[in-house]
Length: 233
Image (tube, rainbow, N blue to C red):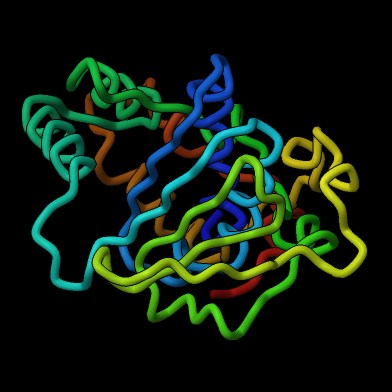
């Protein structure tokens, strides 16, 4: 999985296991300036709905291009340091390394624990894109617990906030179902290509000498009939 729906699904999973388990008034989110994953209308729609449902104000801040490091980079650094001390063959082993790298780090099995949902199409029933807000040029966004459908944006911390209404005409606060973030349709997993299957099979056969018992945990070839339906690339 990749793309904005997958990233929003992962963020929602994390928030449901942290922020949403206890009352919170303010939520501060930091992301890099990647439009394909973080800086897109799907996230704008999601945070607008989240702020209303959980009655919290959200500050969504993007690091400028060429930034040095964010707090999350330190967490990745701890994982990289831990990986130097372990030989990892399987996803389960990798997750154990991440969990044990630091108290602040954790891992989840996306395939088993995180349903990838179609947030864009589902939330687009209630919210609309507003071209005047210029996602690409703004780096700070605010979502309000008590101002449904209003997003405040600015380019720089010294600039004034500018408000934009992204709620569709006729959509009122009571129109947004409380479970709207948990009910978008689950997207089917993307199918591996024949080339990717061949790469995984090569790794399995070449690098698992002495740990043959882990081969099937790393990669198990699908039935020939299923493999035949995969695209070439």
